[in-house]
Amino acid sequence: MSYLTNRTAYRTMLAFGVGLAVCGPVLAQHPDATPAIRLHLTPDSLHFPVGQPVWVMFAVENITEEPLTLTVPGTQPRIPSPEILLPLNHVYSGGSSSGVTITTESGNKWDKPVGYRAEPEAPILVIAPHGVVGTRIDLRETFPTIRGSGQYRVTWRPYSGEVGSVTALIIIAPRKHVEFRTDDGVLTFELFYGEAPRHVANFLDLVRSGFYNGLTFHRILPGFVLQGGCPRGDGTGIRPDGQRLPAEFNDHPHQRGSLSMALLDDNPDSASCQFFICNTRQKAWDGKYTVFGQLINEQSFVTLDKLMSTELDESGRPRRTLYIRSTRTVDAPADSPATPWP
Image (cartoon, rainbow, N blue to C red):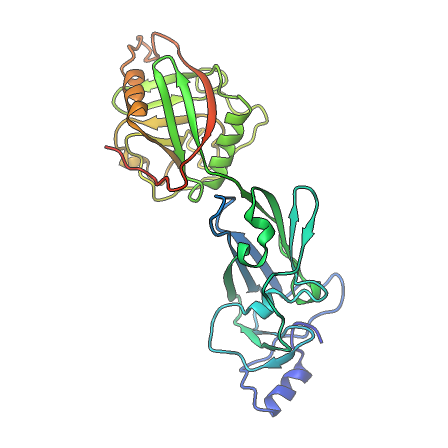
């Protein structure tokens, strides 16, 4: 039987007192048929610190105009429980495998969740039209291989593999701080992995490649902001590969020491490589630019003040060249919080 209950089976369940309100449509068997459900595999973040939970959302969406009734192939359907989460029987319903596969960088694959035992019975799942049912799972608990540092690709093909999700990439590694060394001192940034994962990944990629080494802070608005990271040195440059980032607006305010991405022509999805550091609270910029980091420690703010005090010429540009001499990543303390500064 398909994972979608057909009408004959539905009538049988009604005869035996299984109280389902409506029946899902018959699963079309034609290979070109439009699927009735869509799977969502969504990690809480792209980056996870070593030793911390790796939370991933598994969700099933009904993309039809009718309620759908889902059963787990190879099990005896039973009356749904009152819980509204996606049952684990449905998550791990791949058939010969669990349906969840972890692939390591070396190509090793793991598809047997540790500590999970498939039951002969599984609850019937009814999803309203355009409804979504899901559950969050800490993958470390069932796939211990994901506890170590590395990059892992997660795929999900439940219901005997009849449907599949988009592959999700998960990076397990120590959190990093970033240091910029200037002629006026060192700027150290904490990064907001959870709130702006794409911006953090982009910034780390540029730092590790040495992109910012030798570039400058080309713009100072006294009392407001310090801007840098332009490969042309005039505010018009982008990454050599032309990559742009979608906005990841979050609840971090633009405050003294905030690290945020500059945009082109007020396009919220145009962030590339240029960034700015706030010197004072800029409430009007909240929700318009993506904050992805914060200056930490006293030395960083002393350095910021020195850079901000640079004399400007008639056009508002620094009279001396403010070089970013070198950049590097350093391991962040395991308990490092997002630190507010005045």
